[in-house]
Length: 90
Image (tube, rainbow, N blue to C red; front, side):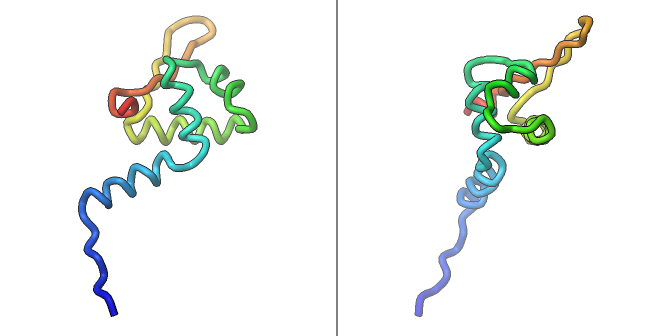
């Protein structure tokens, strides 16, 4: 018989981070953005096997969680770049 170990706030915080970036697509996208901002199609070409829909869902989730920024430039055609936020870099 052993008592359950209480879960600390640090463990809970670590679990939240791992749940967010623990999937293979998020890790790959963040690794690519670690080298600097990239356009959507650059990311798609660089991440072998990812569908356009999955890449869209991945960057949206990373943006929602504050790990990636999306910058739109008023050019023709419109240019969109993704980059890591300071929190994403840590």
